[in-house]
Image (cartoon, rainbow over all chains, first blue to last red; front, side):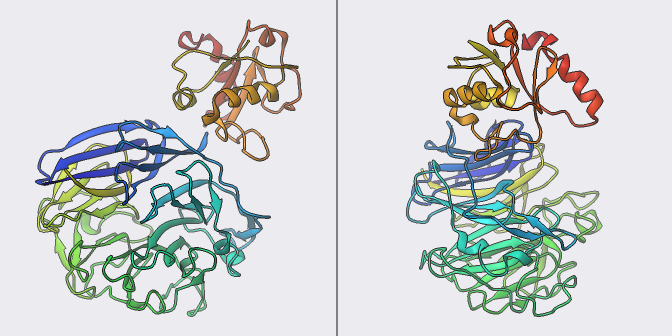
Length: 372
Length: 117
């Protein structure tokens, strides 16, 4: 039987939830790094006990933690993130030039082949890489140096690179998303990048065909079909069947197509999940009902999943990196809320139950399916 | 030896328990040389008090000693004799949000807190 380890980043520390394959009884460890913001934790697919965590604070800046034993013990590793060359400027909220300044690491994506290699998505938006287990970090400056960089503008949460997807069939191909610049793809391991935002429509951008400026909230892919991408944008849920060359809206019958998370079933590449949020000014579920929506058709046709989720007086948010799936035979779906709950479904969304109810606001959720 | 009082989060990060941190400073005892010695002894603190590259104080960090605010002093300014002798510590403080006047007042009284002395 397999085990499941859930890595939860919160506003006040990290928590690790573990269970056997039944996913019925859970052990909770934490808070790790109590009092610090933990934007993201993730394990290496090559060595699942090798974990990386982004620990930050408005007072004390950025720390990166590494564990070699599945989160029992941690060591602080390198935290020096320096932009290559003269950083230059991006746009500020009011359209004026603003200098690039490192603030924090939003997302850590371990390599699919080497536990010492990790990609980091940071604010102000850039991508860094370590090849020595986090001791040193170097910018992949071709992204920020893309000609559009001076036109990138922050979203409400800052100018953040928050999403990194590595093509499992071709590790030189990666997809990233930046709020609010849009999605980008590299085909050469991060040396050069191209925007992949054709087909996106954003009301606040006057130019419908704008190359950049879209507020992409999250993207997901199924490992078996890396050319098919799903996206939850600020508004709109979309898919691309050609590695981002063109996007098509698949919001269909969703009650609202605003939201943050999107993910794909581990065994059904056309089954996807979102959590609709009322609007960009009201970051809570419509009608006080927390509903996950599932589409078994890759979008357009959606069904609400409510069994076990609060259906009245619920006003939490589900942030962009706070949904994940396990790969057990009956795929488990997990998401965390700003109210401190982590919900899981052991049956692909049919029923839900809280694993924990009272954590600090959840920022990120990752799941590891482990051989016991 | 110079005594340095760190905020709780940085004590945890450096793994130094609840007491003052003692650092051996070679040469003149200045704010900069104390922080150099502190970071050399506890490398995990690099980047958390000062910027990695510029070595400028992070925006929400303050320095105090002998009831004086040293936050805006040059790193080359010699520290008071009482700090050099170890009679008084150098306080590294996370700035307190909610009003400058109140914040400074609280920080200046910092040394009187029993658990910090």
